[in-house]
Length: 131
Image (cartoon, rainbow, N blue to C red):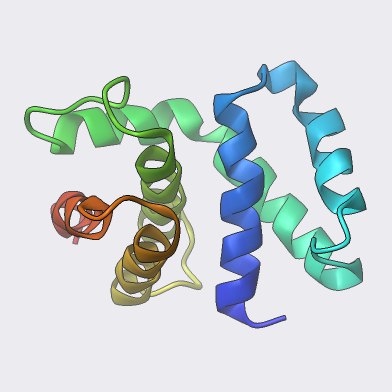
């Protein structure tokens, strides 16, 4: 699986956080990987590990987003945009393997694919403040 495909899998799994309690996420993760379109084997391990690392930092990431997003807070953001931003902020601030420009570009591409018409501009604008 390509890095982009892996990132999309992480996004889809992370999106479930918005609809489930954190204590239910291990079951959600299992259900996610039972889906025939989900990652397999080593890719599944990568997706799971990165998802867990992001989950552990959600409070910090949301705090950073609330500081940088003038006029917005995480409670007002669309769930899709918020999930994309959480993934990208994690990659920018905590994942040394992902260059900042790549994290922003990939987040914008996810926003184009899964978000609303204005999502890519919104995501780009917020993430520019992290760069």
